[in-house]
Length: 102
Image 1: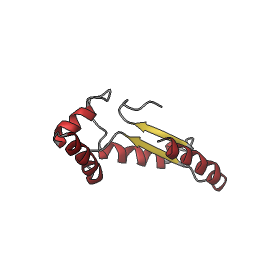
Image 2: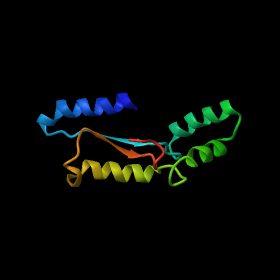
Image 3: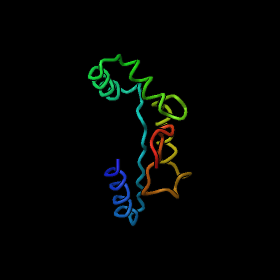
Image 4: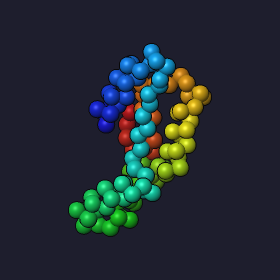
């Protein structure tokens, strides 16, 4: 996480003179995505539990007791790319439902 956040800041410094903003979006996991299902599935199998049990365990550690949805991530990405977020660059938006500290 730290390396990605530092890359976001460094790219922002480098690209800002050209009018390019750089932001990152950090989620705990989006269960609708194949990659997350595969990754979480491997971890679930390694610990001897089902995908659903693993999902519920991860979700239970968030403030909202659920994981970020793909639609929520898409909405935030669209907002961050819009002029309404023009004052933001060099930062990462925490969409982990409170499970990861800033």
